[in-house]
Image (cartoon, rainbow, N blue to C red; front, side, top):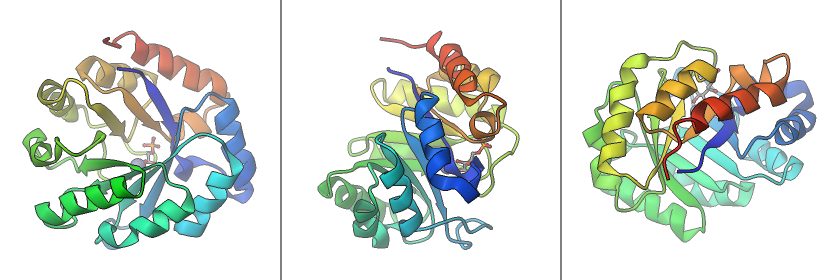
Length: 221
Ligand code: DX5
Ligand code: ZN
């Protein structure tokens, strides 16, 4: 499984959005991770479609949208129009059937579709979605804020999902740095969202390179 590094826009200097996005691209980001929060599903509000559109216009790399909102299925056309390449929805934001429908709707728009699990949910919760999704997101912090501490008790969940789905992209999000990326990679993750440890590092390029190297040690064919 190839390693992907996805800097989280939430941690950038939003006063100079375009410049920051190009800085991430130059530093070796594979994709940009955009956290959409509605103040209902999580206790924070971030940004919406026009902001994502501005990000997309600034760079050539794919945009990975992490929907931390209720009713994510309502916004799929808007996300496509904004330039999203992947859309991740949380599995507890709607019924199982509605989430599967949302996944199909995302794929019908030509985007990749992923399902996320908050820390309190077990690996087994991903199972009904496995036939349909491109990626599973294992939250390694409570969603809502950047800069939180990595929850190492999520590692067995990553390993479990990897054993259930040997070919699936597995993304981790929250508190990822060189050290925690290695732990997650060892457990089976291959897509790393990095906010604080990328944009706020003294040298973003060297930070991304180190995180990538740490993860690639555990890359499996
Ligand atoms: C948290 C977001 C993350 C966040 C990660 O709810 O989903 O993407 O930006 O930030 P760090 O890497 O600082 O934990
Ligand atoms: Zn996120």
